[in-house]
Length: 159
Image (cartoon, rainbow, N blue to C red; front, side):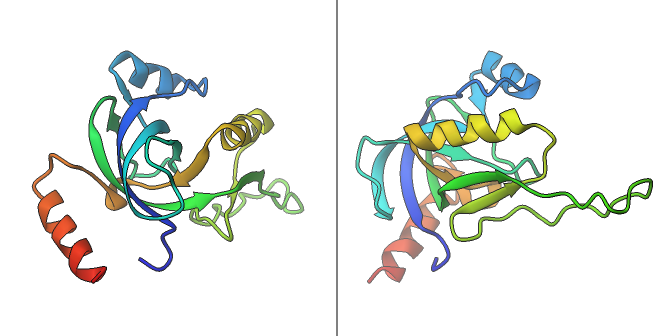
């Protein structure tokens, strides 16, 4: 838990429209990936009760799809800024190597995207809300079978 900046329980309340087709299709089903979460309990972090957090996720096979209105235990890492990664173009004409796996380094995320607008939209969210990242491996529904065991472990680890 040392790398994690936040461990919270909260309810997914809205899927902010970041204008992707995928986000729009999830909105229609009352679901979301990058959601606002209303904080209900703080286990670790400088988050306040009732505060709204923006939850950003890397689009990977570990992406958590949140059900709006459902409560989740979130293990997250704070994001302070998004930047557009510099892509090496000196090997033009050749296949470029894949980008490194996504990660947060000192609160900074480099996005391997061709869309400057995407970086701006995400930084606009940071101006409105504290922002953290999580995924399916580090978040779970409070209604899941693993929730009581996880909470028991957290209570033991904090004592």
